[in-house]
Image 1: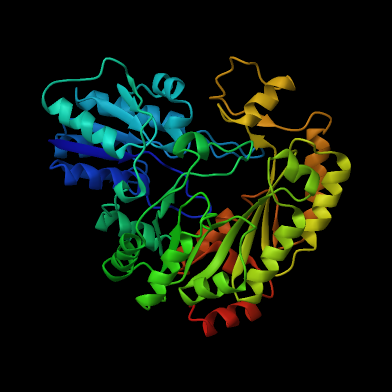
Image 2: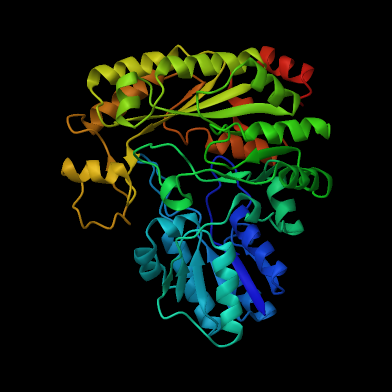
Length: 458
């Protein structure tokens, strides 16, 4: 059966990201014997005419639309993406009577509301590899679900999570935007951060892929497609069981030296495991510190303290790994005193770049949504499709913005608002510079970069 998959993502901040989820669905459908075409709205210049041309050219019997984000979670510069999805779905419906199936991480956050808003015929909640294959198999027999939102509590095991069917033309486009190839090594998250949707979307236990299969993907990305850097998209790379080290050992065994980065939690690392990862190509780390004081870390449900964040940063920098941190102000428990203390803590972090956000986007079915209900910020039956941000009651929004702007003014390695460097980074990529954003913004980072080169980085 012919299937057209469309990535509806239009976000390119701070750089465009390959539509990995769509390509993993494509791989599962092809393994099941279906003919699949992948279409990327961003690559097509965000042209609805190009969408129509793709439908007419491929004549699909089923169309899948992947939704990565519903908005940009930036209180100070809000951008909403569902109108784009609606326009794509409407244009598809003008060209064909084939059913349109919505999916992706963005869709699964609020499926019923998004299905209604975007106008899709069906939607798949959660992991789509198995369910999309079942939908297409049934559609080939003229059988369609009674319920428009397709749910299934079962999840793939780690060994069942497929490799992505990377599309050569799409990969060329995204590599030109930064040279970064992306892949996934595991799903699930064991942490209890109050704002996060990962446990809702992927479950609360880790399901790790076979390290050999992951490294096969790496060799393909580097050898077949020419990726110069890698990004592991796992919610947290350094899982508590140490399964991430199996990836590093396999990369080291195969003598791969391609530089890579991932999201790290600021705990559970030591010299031995960092040294192993550096030998396997670890170039930089994006650390989800999230809050800058012990009080606000507790308010977010974190188990570590800010001293652990500092120790983690020092450990990585000592091994020549560049670091970036992400912080939110206005967390549960925030006071004017913790705001000032948090600013001082971030300013004192050395050899790193920090991105600072104001407020926390409230997502359905998270502990933060329940906290917001108790505080009267949202109503119990509020859909939250329209962005609502949590700011601790008692913290004045205007005061907080002014205080953050003043506190980080003139500091190149402390970025507030968080999209302040977007245009500069995109311009550098257009000039041919590739790699990770933090390499371009950390002042005085030559010493760290020099250490990376001695450890095999580039």
